[in-house]
Amino acid sequence: MPKQAAEVRRHNFSEVALGYSVEHAVEEARRCLNCKKPKCVLGCPVEIDIPGFIRCIAERDFSSGVSVLKEKNLLPAICGRVCPQEEQCEETCILLKKGGQIAIGRLERFLADWEARQGELEIPKSPAATGKKVAVVGGGPAGLTVAGDLIKLGHQVIIFEALHKMGGVLIYGIPEFRLPKAIVSREVDYLKKLGVEVITDFVVGKTRTVDSLLQEFDAIFIGSGAGLPWFMDIPGENLNGVYSANEYLTRMNLMKGYLFPRFPTPIKEHKRVAVVGGGNVAMDCARTALRLGAEARIIYRRSRQELPAREEEVENAEEEGVIFDFLTLPIRYIGNENGWIKEIECLRMELGEPDSSGRRRPVPIEGSEFILPMDAAICAIGNSPNPLIAASTPGLEVGKRGNIVADEESGKTSRERVWAGGDVVTGAATVILAMGAGRKAARSIHEHLSSL
Image (cartoon, rainbow, N blue to C red):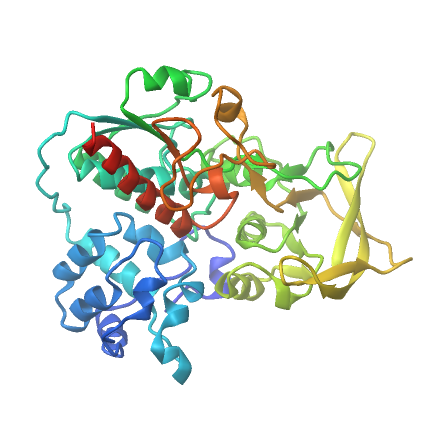
């Protein structure tokens, strides 16, 4: 897919990937073999008819392709940009054996963008109202999917979002250059037009409890995400200039930090920024810092081969000039007399035997300590769910890391009439897996409501 040149995009927050032209999309779609038993569909958490929409593109019937997509996915412009298709639907493509699977995600994005260029989106006819009410806690990918599925079945749906904008991690967690805010807003507006009601600045567990909502609603879905950041518990983490990835990206995204100084966002103009971690969030932080004028580096305790981030995101970071310090572990942050971070002390590592994740375990090299000058550090090693809902909901079973325990196939929790899905159950994962959990929960909720 065409994209901005690295030397240009590293200085702006415009979208990196530019999308397929019509001719490029049609050419790519015509490579599809239209398998009788398409394995790609089995690899899709939301069960999209992948050969169906690709066939429509090949025939230049883009309108029908959009219809096929939206039968299963109301957020195609988002999924086409941020889902790891290479590990899911594309990984099972028959053409992979011949060295070139179909670019399913890019074709999904093409259709969604084509629809947006047509102007006003077509809104399907509303089904007959069932009279049943569902509260959705959290306006992220899981909650949006549940809301979309249930509104199409005639149930009344209200989403309660803690922040002042809908979208959850899609809005506050993913940078503008990877997922433009206008696209998220467009997808949310579509749900509103279907009849979903949205209430923002509403913190379930504080504004109202789950038990209070159960007095008014027939069912509740909790999709509040994983908003509690992890830290390494090393000296100096309370110094100024040491951020969690959540804080750093939220300041950039919701508080328009990327438009500083036009927007007086409280973010310091850092010169040297270290990001600890190797996932997509770490890449997002480093590439954001780079665009704000800093020297940005990734500190990762394993080698490049073990990086959990998508290869596409790693390549983009490398092209843009992010520095990678592999086999490196921070052991303390060192501050100046004013309480700001000025250095990071690190250890060199070597790889030992594989651990429970299947990746080779990093082992410290004795006596290999060294110092990196740094005026900011961002910890991007993972998140857990915020404990607020669990703490304010008696009888709601939670796991060791504070995640809500829910049935994998139905999303049912230990509380009657309460379902949960997405990162609040699994911990920080992908957008499409959260959507898949939302789809399963919506089915179960509909079965329950139909039995009343």
